[in-house]
Length: 182
Image (tube, rainbow, N blue to C red; front, side, top):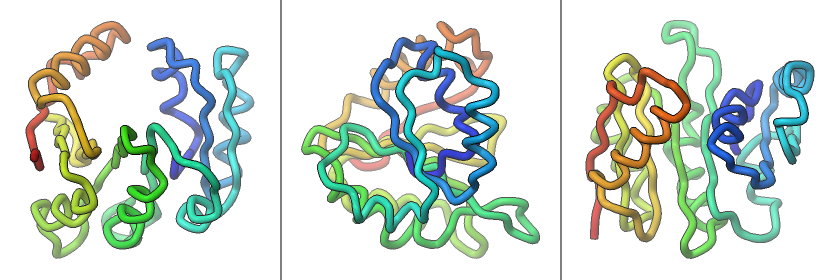
């Protein structure tokens, strides 16, 4: 997980019975401290490294089934934005660190003076398949990319069922569409 923050994604993953080992990286050390204070045994195996995400990923040996990119940095006008590396070198690096059947999930925010079309095209370019997940109430968008993905309709049903299982009202307020499909 690139951009661990305070580990907010861990609880829903564990609630959905994902018991995998999670590796996270973030420059913000206080986030891990907060996560450790509020999480109990339910957190499972979670390792966090305090480092720059691209350098950390580059130094890792082995390949991953899933890489979640959730990096952000403060911006004086936008509140938060993505580091430019999230649109530039990071997608290529992530694609090289994935297993052949692996997937990448990007939590994207708008970039000043760049269209969503340009952002999505740039980030998804290393993969033959990509699905876009858009929420009615949020400006961020999720991009799922891989060499092979299920259809947008099938993925939408699976996400909807998982959100319903978690008791989230988001199960009614999102859509999934094909962005790239070979």
